Length: 208
Image (cartoon, rainbow, N blue to C red; front, side, top):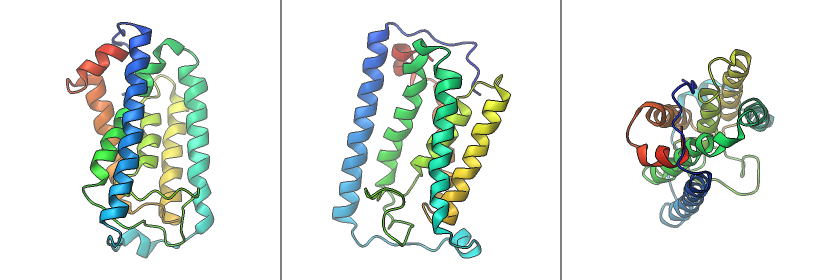
């Protein structure tokens, strides 16, 4: 995955940006509303047992590994992929917006208490939706959307996925099932985006 040899061209740059911005705003609004629903309706949500939490030690400072993974991942992606073909920016950003929109719809189905037991994970704004993990989802998208011919960049992105997963598990940022869910969600989005028909109207507007 990540090959762009059969890219679909967008109908117009303005329409492409309009679709991407609209998807992004919709995903943000759905996430906020989903969090509010979980907080208001499921204040006493269960905090399930997690096998990997039992096996791995708790390392609070490991939460910063997730920040490092995102900074390096996005930095490589912007300078290694987007900068070389800015006209494709809407087509590249659309899968991220779709992933977060789908995540917002999924997370309210299984409301769980935050995995971390010491308050906010990194920032003061608490993320209540646990499943699937958006952090891991983004990291996987960055890796899968990096063209296969950029080997060292793609390998680095997958290394950042591993770093993200380690940070999440050690610092109790997400349950292990959230991490698996984030990976599967991103795989689904990229696979359908590149070869399926489900997102065809969006692809027609943004390109692929």
